[in-house]
Length: 92
Image 1 (cartoon, helix red, strand yellow):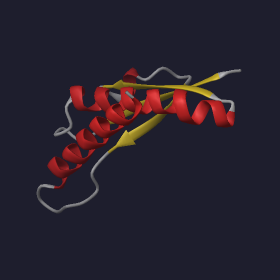
Image 2 (image 1 turned 135 degrees about the vertical axis):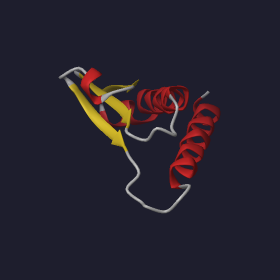
Image 3 (image 1 turned 60 degrees about the horizontal axis):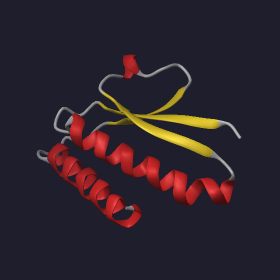
Image 4 (image 1 turned 120 degrees about the horizontal axis):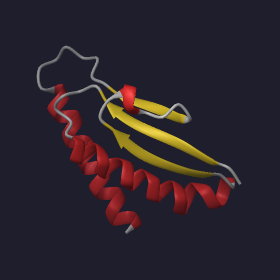
């Protein structure tokens, strides 16, 4: 069974590397425990600081804020952190 490689890259400066790494780890764990056995697909999820750093064989997911509403970047960072925390508790 082949493994799909997924990269999460943030173009939003308010999302820290630690937050991105936390979400990537939680998603990777959920994919391996819940998605993989059902769909017979392996995948790993890794966080990268810049799109240029992502290996060519990875599928990138780019996080960016497209809203001009003030404070949306911080809210997105908070949501990503809560998502990562919740996935870690659920999968942990």
